[in-house]
Length: 90
Image 1 (cartoon, rainbow, N blue to C red):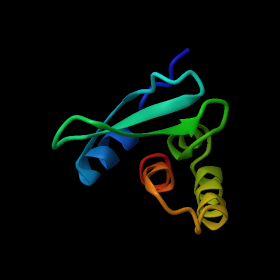
Image 2 (image 1 turned 180 degrees about the vertical axis):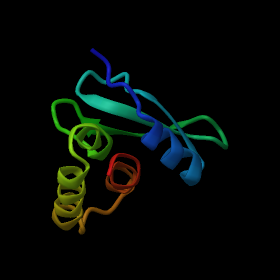
Image 3 (image 1 turned 120 degrees about the vertical axis):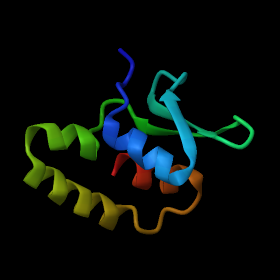
Image 4 (image 1 turned 90 degrees about the horizontal axis):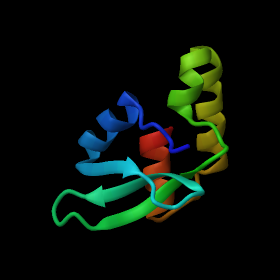
């Protein structure tokens, strides 16, 4: 089953001036595209792992803590995958 892109992620994508679609890769959640030329930038979010919008549906307090811990774990991630995962899913 494909990942359902949340309103949270759509809002964040608009702020970053990119488009998002369900990923064509079976193990990823989202494909990120440039609005300038429509080219794919990166695939992000491993299927099987949670993300901020998903956790927020059940317990916003837990989601905030998971977000904080995600940011700590991934603070040294550079490059487009880390940037977009952090900004679109967390």
